[in-house]
Structure formats: structure tokens, C-alpha cells
Image (cartoon, rainbow, N blue to C red):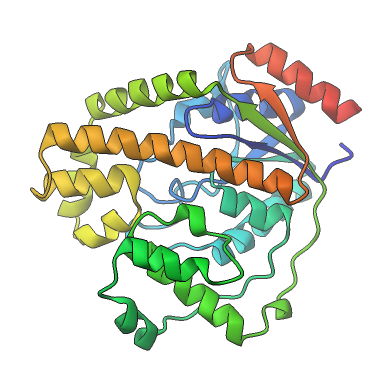
Length: 304
């Protein structure tokens, strides 16, 4: 393959994983997950791991960067870059190709563009200064920095404060000190019609609630993970934690969560369109095509 690896990206509910798994089986590749929440053990239904998608016609497609951290841990982009490199080098050392698949634009772009990131320590003084500010106020502060790599992934005050903390650190330190290899990746985007995407999101949310997503959150809380740590992860874990702890009624929680997921999918697409403006070539394929049609289109691009 003339590319270092293939990237398959798209918004939630677009069918990225089944496509990546089918392609991986056909070309003998392994998948590296580019999802910021599927790295956590025990957070399965809420993050939509759907590990059965990695089994194609009885074949178990090897995958990486899923279930690698304990819930409650604050995994970050620096660690993702490090772990991606480790997984990529391991895959290539065994003579296989790699497919990066996910919907976390910040993680994917950090690898494709080679962000030169360094681990950022806590700034207690800054955190205390920002502690009483609202999410809107924090996002406004964040927007005043030049680098906004993670502005679209901020949906809680805690995340916003961390983002500001990172940007403040970058202003005062030499980020160029850390190198990252330049990769040549064939980027495939799964393009799904807005109304179809909304329908799939709504149906999938109801399915996950039926599958026991509430019990999953209860189990995580019962294991000793603080409610604020689960809320930090946003979306399903934020709203279900608020429901389980009595801060929200069930029906209201469901309606607000559904709205939040739709908004999240819209932000994902905004990020991917932004990547195109920043010079990335994303080859979009129709989500409604059959798996065979999609793979044929990708194989054509690989051979072009």
C-alpha cells in the first residue's frame, strides 16, 4: 500500500466501524480506534463500542486503543498520539496495514497533522481563578487563544477549564520540542444525510437505553467513580449520571441527551469540514451504499 495507513472518519451513527472492519478483513489490516471515550474499560454501551462489529463473517478483526484505561482517568491527546504510534509500529512490525477509524476529530487530526504536543501539568492557580465561571464564559475565554484544537469537544466546564489550561501552558512553553512523524494517509469520510443521521441517532439512543445504559452508569458510580468524573465525559455519561443522581427526571434526561447527541454529530461534521479547509483531502463516500460498494470505492482510491 502506498499510504502509511487508511483513515476512516465520520459523525456518530454513520457506520464507520462496520466499514473499517470489513475493509480490514479484506486487506489484512488492523484497526486503531480514534474515539476519545472507547478507551475506557466498563464504558461500553454509552460509548457505543459495539465490539461485535469487529467480527466479520466469523473473522475477528484485530483492534487497538479500546479498553486501555480505567474510567475516571483523564486521557488526553498527547497520550493518544503516543499510544497511536505504539500501536501503529506494532502493526507494521508484523507486516500488516493499519486503519485509523473514529469520530474524534481532534484525535484524528493530531495524528494526521502531527501536532507537536507535550504533557501539560495542572495549573491550580488558574483552575481556582476559573472555577466560578459558566461554560459560556469559559468558551469565550478559550476562543481568545490562537490554538483551538479542542474547542468543539468542550461540553462541560471542567473540559473547558482543562482546554484553557493547555492553551495557557502552550503560550509559555516550547511546544516544538516534541517531534511527531509525518504520515501520508488516505482519508475516507462517511457522508450521511442529515435526516438519516438524526433518525439513526434517535433509534440508537433508544436501543442503548433498552440494552441497559442506565445500569451501566449505576455500576460505574457504585464502583466508586465520582459523579463529576462521569459528567466530565459528556453526552450519555453526563446526562445519565444527572438522572441517576436525581438531578434530572427520566423523560427530560432522554430528550436533552438526544438533543445533545444531535448537536455533537453536527460539531463532528463542522470539525471534518474544517479539516478540509486546513488542507486535508477527505474522500467522501455515501453512507447508504452497500459495504461492497464502499469497499470497491476505497480500493479504487487506493489503486489510483
